[in-house]
Image (cartoon, rainbow, N blue to C red; front, side, top):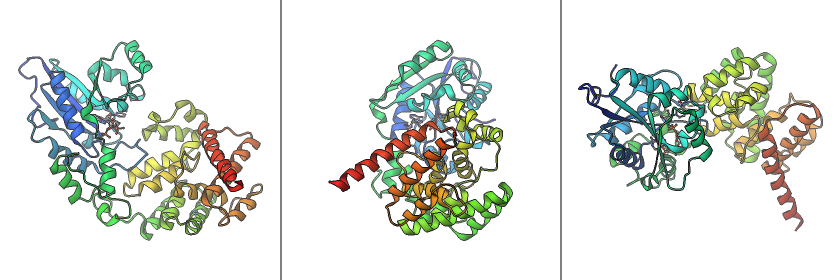
Length: 436
Ligand code: NAP
């Protein structure tokens, strides 16, 4: 197996060598990553650094990840002028979720024992290491370098826990060179601002030529760069195809509910100035994972890599509450061109979030008010549609739902209380302002 075109023979002469492995999503790679890798190389006397962009990290729900081939191409462009750097497509070529332990094991198998491995990554990424698959083996097989921006402090209790396990050797590299972030680069491109001097010029050209990180409405440019999926996810053909899929995924009654939610979401979107195509699609897909049993949901959480994000006790005690999150993760993996705000609304339709976008609220409300729902005084809420603003309608719907859960003695996800408190306080403030 070829890991790195330049450094595959490292250590073949039997001399002690040190190899840095720079792991990250690199969406996109920026000057901060490059400067940190160089600083790590000097500080720890590394003979070489191999950048390994992650495959599709499906556990990332906050946004869609740019196609792996684009991220890899940008890393290739960024590192080629440094003779100590190379890039490997090891994780991108591997199928399924990206787990660091698989990479470390592959490298350990490939290189002789005289090559010491140093896994370098962001300190905030590393702060979740105890939830990574076979994390202690990562510690046994490699040293870790945690890079942090000034002001980020690695949790002392985590440091203590890592020490206590006796298998981790972690070095902390706080550096002002890492003041740039990939999200800043993406946001600037989306806003049409300059990214000169944040990424190297070849990467900047690549981003502009391939139309990466453009805002969602610029679909024409974006569609072709996303994982090769050509259909317009907001078009009729995609909608029809997913509707057909749902017939195999859920029962007839559930499908009727789903159709009701999609229609209600569209109606609400038109009333409240939200994109109706996105609302219909999110409504259609919100219960994509509702056909799984509790046990299957637990497996699905794991298979999608969400177990790193969700408290395992909650997954065991209320697996069904995570069907929105698993649906969003699974759909993101299968159809990377679905807009991220649609995925977010799907992920949030069960417990809500702070704060909710307009589309999030539309889907949450549509799920509660679609015509098939008949319980309690739901018609009072229906009567408010179009008469109160969207946030008030969401608050009243959420409140109604919380009361219903209490009345039926059902368990509640802990986030529900926080979301309720947040919107109740805002509701109170609005009422007070109206009185003044
Ligand atoms: P992330 O959540 O995208 O990044 C978290 C933070 O770390 C961000 O501030 C990011 O800055 C920074 N960062 C990421 N890579 C960095 C690097 N090489 N050097 C300096 N800062 C870096 O994290 P990620 O990219 O997904 O994951 C980082 C690494 O951890 C990857 O290799 C990933 O495969 C591994 N990981 C493994 C597991 C597992 O095995 N179960 C789970 C999570 C992560 P930017 O946004 O500016 O890059």
